[in-house]
Amino acid sequence: MSRQNSGALISVNGLGFPPQNLARVVVWEWLNEHGRWRPYTAAVCHHIENVLKEDARGSVVLGQVDAQLAPYIIDLQSMHQFRQDTGTMRPVRRNFYDPSSAPGKGIVWEWENDNNSWTPYDMDICITIQNAYEKQHPWLDLSSLGFCYLIYFNSMSQMNRQTQRKRRLRRRMDLAYPLTMGSIPKSQSWPVGTNSGQPCSCQQCLLVNSTRAASNAILASQRRKVYSGNSNGTLAVRQSNTFNGTALWSAGAMPTGGTAKMEQVRSPSGTQVTTFSRSQSAPTGTHLPGQNNLNRPGTQRVAILSTRASIPPGVPALPVKNLNGTGPVHPALAGMTGILMCAAGLPVCLTRAPKPILHPPPVSKSDIKPVPGINGICRKTKKKHLKKSKNPEDVVRRYIQKVKNPPDEDCTICMERLVTSSGYEGVLSHKGVKPELVGKLGKCGHMYHLLCLVAMYNNGNKDGSLQCPTCKAIYGEKTGTQPPGKMEFHIIPHSLPGYTDCKTIRIVYDIPTGIQGPEHPNPGKKFTARGFPRHCYLPDIEKGRKVLKLLIVAWDRRLIFTIGTSNTTGESDTVVWNEIHHKTEFGSNLTGHGYPDPNYLDNVLAELMAQGVSEANLKD
Image 1 (tube, rainbow, N blue to C red):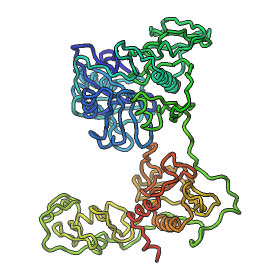
Image 2 (image 1 turned 180 degrees about the horizontal axis):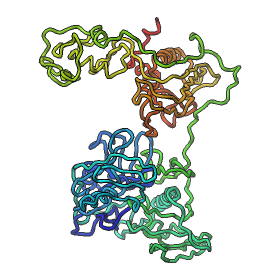
Image 3 (image 1 turned 90 degrees about the vertical axis):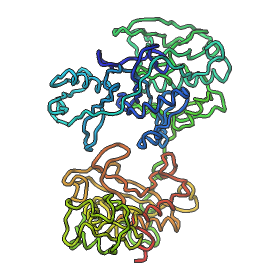
Image 4 (image 1 turned 180 degrees about the vertical axis):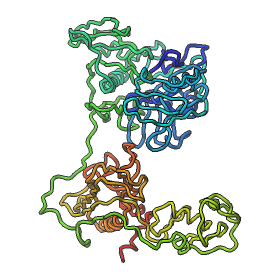
């Protein structure tokens, strides 16, 4: 989305390169699930530009410049961002702005979200806000950009015009976005002839072209409705102004039967539109220009004809997410394999993604049996009862030994030298705990200021236990902040993949919504509990029953769940898993949370050990 005088420049060739000898600021952006282009940070854009200069058809590992983006890779040839752990792909684009605009000056405008962290505005909004700020306007109405917000510069706040809710906003200086001048050799994402610049007519290239045409049709149909304003049933195809690619099909790849009516018309907005009759096929030798959808950085995608080339036997099939979905788009080939094969020019047939088998076949009550060696079939937890007489100083002194002559090294809690006073001096005061006192933890031997350990304990769950911040060794019995709920466990007469010779232990967790307690992030505020009851599975073998016993201990200590922000949905104040992985997929392993997984039982035992739950607890 661009505005007049906002400094935005729409690219017109290839990956989007400015006219020769014209300096422009480059901003790389990705398309989110709401159809909005979100900018990468300036540091990430500099990294992408450096890779682009070396290899315009390569891949960019975003984790090399930003650790939070470690799962993401950008494929420059297909202009898509790929998430390695989920297989999700999103379009990216290379946009240009005036050097005097906000990104050229390194100015970032951000608003405060519900998690009390700062979120940058879309780049066109950022530029609009900065323009108004420079002109010393007292306020700015964003309704012209499609947002019902008012910006007040005097109070540095954003107000929702409908709900009247206000949020803080801020203006900060950051690294300026990269500057480019002239043109860079254009990346070619389709197989082309050596000399002619036209698609090669070999069978492999024809097959690749037709397969990618099918991919384009799937992606386009997910993003917008087909443009069809004519009463005679013609299919309108809008030509993007951001890319003039090679022909999508060569002459040899087009159907030979029938004729098609192709017209150039003008839409009400002045956009040039090409229309084809639905009932006719394109004539032999007709080329469709500018329809290389996977390489398009712009927001306007093409609705391709529904004609599909037949895929011969032997072509690998890769699943596509949301093939027939109506919700937000997650344009994806489900795996890096799709990117690599497309980039190499190898044929790939897109198919519907297989669905995970989350639950076993129906089981009658008479077939459900208790787990051998474990008493009962249910565990309940109630609200936490705060234990009295847990004085922080007493807890800390229980696990440490005083050090008379501490070494001249850092206390890793306050980062002050152990030979000097604690960094919490003046901030925290406890009788009998002098700021210069140093103690050594009994098991691991790590040393800290006593006042620092007291401060760390006060900032935790205050359950009488202590955890070394260096090696994570646990002193005492660690408990968590899991809200009240119920845990059931029993045997069902079905087998897990990889454990066909035994039955299955099914665990059912059920936690209702409620109000957060004093140990939670926002005491007194309501929390949600999505996806309950949650069903989890273990093989009914000796090690599986051992894991179940330890999970029961972890449940009783309130360590299985906690209240926080969901990594999946981004929702805050909701019940989430607490670093002890469970298998929630019964008959497959498409999500990574199922079977077969030969290392799972050993891994979960290690995770339980890290929470202070071990076999030693089973002897009690």
